[in-house]
Length: 375
Image 1 (spheres, one colour):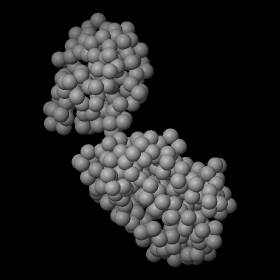
Image 2 (cartoon, helix red, strand yellow):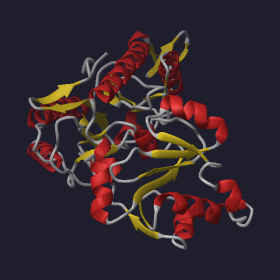
Image 3 (tube, one colour):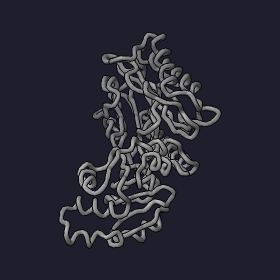
Image 4 (tube, helix red, strand yellow):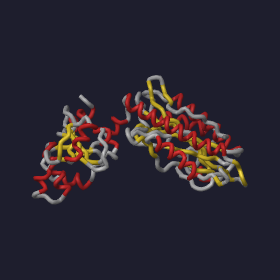
């Protein structure tokens, strides 16, 4: 019995139903079909999943997905629309006619459609079965994420090279006679990503005081002797899989505080790597790093180490499992980041982030990139 069928049976439902575009990671995972328009997917226990979609998309859906493809006409929607003009009620009637009286839906299911469905059947919200299934990657998924990480590493190399090649004028980095800005560095990385079938948004290139705010995206000229945090998390358009990577660099001479923080950071990441094994809770790995930082005099509150140690990566850049206070036992096949960071207003921030897979032997790091602070 496949896990989703098992969940359907245990819940007493007739079918699992979702309605979304493939921008919804669960839908893309279940169907491997890519479209920006929402469509219906349902699965009955022990049976193949079914896509209900417009006639114009059936050919492509049949080619891309292992699910059975049904047109909206075959599912009875045109006949329903003759007497029901409300689109949510009409879609609900169509779904109920295919699935049965009791259905299970994911947490992100559209509220309006769920309310309409309750007129025709019992609706129960699942606790995240598909999200949990996605946490354990197959061999093809691991290959896809490794590939995206290779592209990510090359883009990061371009960013670091720009900073390394820059000159310093009055404390500001210059390249080609002009100030080197966060925007230029992002542009160089994004161009490389596009050339290799990937895209990125919210890329971080922050400098100086901005680095004390973990997700400050950064803007304007970069400065010498101050930390620059570069955090890049692109997605490959063809596969839909993400990667995630962070490095911190300084052009010039970092302050003693930044240097000490960075030395502690590198040790913390290696400690985390040594703790990752199947069966070890993510919370335990996180706590080991919290304790390490505390021994070094760094807090884990509103300053210092202020975020989780890591997270799962797949069809979303943040997904299960969690490597933080609520982290459950890690499993072989999980893909996680390890990203300790330290942040102090007035001093700045530093962060390192690698991505890799949990294996029977430990942490298989996908990240092959220098950790040099000074460039």
